[in-house]
Image 1 (cartoon, rainbow, N blue to C red):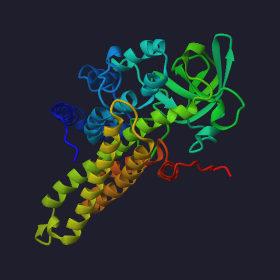
Image 2 (image 1 turned 90 degrees about the vertical axis):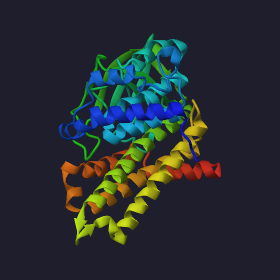
Image 3 (image 1 turned 120 degrees about the horizontal axis):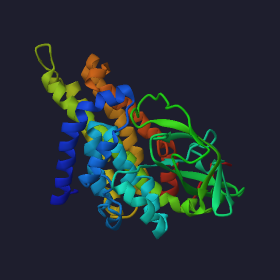
Image 4 (image 1 turned 180 degrees about the horizontal axis):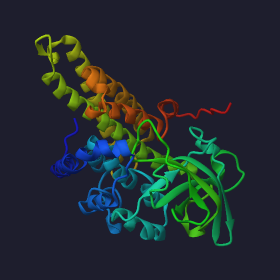
Length: 385
């Protein structure tokens, strides 16, 4: 049993109040219009101490354990993933890569802007021919004096064209696989960088996704965050991000349960509340079980992470289960709401649309299962053979 401390309960209550009063009433418009969270709201999250909870205090962050950030993220995401996205990026996303692997000078240069809400760092890994096979990255990075010259195309970059900076995974040499890969920080306004149109997606609306095109983009060598050959070290950061992803899925499941529980007690058919029918009770029970199991898996991994990274096996198990849970539970919510579940007015269909996005992002359930087997058995499986 995981008991939240008094301080964690206060954080949870603060985030829940903000989400209910400020973000829930705007969630449907953000989804319908594909709108990003206004910058003023990102700064409000920073001022309230909710934005960069896991980043170091010396750079303006909270210096808190990973679990604290996940607690806040879930409450915000219950209202809308748009509201939780800046917390995801700052506390579990690319900013943590700089925190873990950047130099002291890089941390001092970039993290204060993140913690103050002045800047968001997005991650750019996928390419037209490098999705699940991330080590097939072909975007090149050539060192020319005191600059790095980037050429290539990136795809499915969440926040592309909106975020101020991008942690771009590139190939520094022709060495095969992970050996030649590293990561460089690129400014949104860098010369030679262009963004494609915002994708029209099934879900994830308001977070956004677009292609990025690099044509002789030059950045200082001092912006190399992960040098060539450092890709393997990044699994530590990937495990943190996977728990962020799992928490966004958890928020979908919990919201679906909460709304469905209210609905089945209010909705009447054949002269009584539909919750009095055993089929409805059984479906609701399955939803509750799934959500509680996902939360326990996430909390276990986050508790073992402390202020660092969770065990890779626990992070992959949590993400894999939570992603499947969100799809199952939101689907059951649609069924129990009947025609209303299919209506945009009730926002249940939005939950289901978003659930599929989290399952695809950050390593699909299929890839997580391979990772789980690999970690459990202590051996590596070569998918290329």
